[in-house]
Amino acid sequence: MAYLFRVYSDQSNGFNDRFEFKPASAIFGPAPGMTLEAQLIIALSGKLIAPHNPYIFWTISLHLALQLAHKRQAAGEINIRIAFLDVKASRTPAGGLLQFESVASFAARLGLALKKDRDGTPRGLAEFVTMNSVVMKGDSRTASFDALISNGLYKLYPSIEQAAGMRSGSGFNLELRLLQQLYYDPGRKWSLSRTKIALAAKIASAFVAKDASTCKVANQVLGFFLSLQTRDMDDQKALRAWLKTNTKPEVIDLTEASGIEIINITHDSKFDISNPEMDTFRSTSAILKGRTILDSVLGMCTTVPEREIRAEVELWHRQRGENYAAHRASRPLRGQRGFRRGARVFPDHARHPREFPVRKPRTEVYKQRRERRY
Image (cartoon, rainbow, N blue to C red; front, side, top):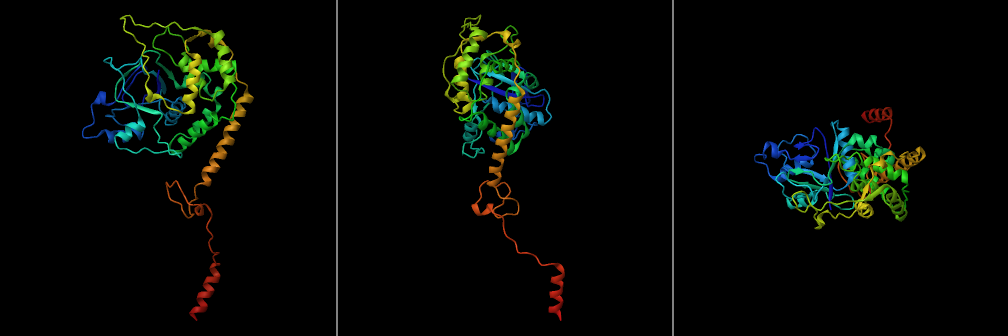
């Protein structure tokens, strides 16, 4: 099954309830005389004032969702929340199926060229757009961003707090790329202890379901938080051992009261994005599948040693310094040959400083002028 995240606040366009979303066009009507292409450009620019915006944006990446929440927080937006959408179970207000498309493919279909990362990958592959109104059902949940932080997000992942430093423009993408580079480095081991699993469960409990009787920790949400770092076989072994004493077999109701089957076993390949985060989530969620997490885990010890937090922060700044130095080395300074505002690629000779002739003292110049005059 597919899951998506949406970051929104009181300043977001359209109607945004905890479990229902409507695009601005559903409230104020379509924009007169504006094409879908023009409206998409406005929507992707991040402008808050777009009363006829027909789009609602989602992302399949929790890393990206957290960075977008930081960006909204830096902009001074109020009541920032993150929605966790169970795509297969959720519906339109009329009960119809929801239609999603990746932003990259949707923009290409409209003839718009999106910016690309350094490796040539178009941006927007991890983001999805819909023009439907959304009623969240099934395992869908919503969390306050402040609750995620107070529950220990920065203690479990200190680098995520450090990545909040750059929140817009190219800096936003640089920090997100560095975060993913650090956490998914195959040569670096992130040990997963029982304490860290319990802390991840506490953070995941910030995502609250509409039905109060539902278990407080959704295993799918826990799977995403455990997948914010690469996990090896030892981590998977530790997770299985933790599940034996802190979960019970999941009881699945195959039908609603009406008798209509609510489990859709069909596979939708458009959500099969291959990146380290999603690959880690698929392997982690396979371990969590079929288990119900006991509410008692919220009373477990979740204290992470300060030395581990400091060590990761130091690692972050060291890696960031190396990346920044490499980034600057590929760009000429102002005043050097090859400098052009907004340019990305420069010849090798543009990276070396120019040599200027030494200027003569002003008094010597005046003396030479007087000698020539007479």
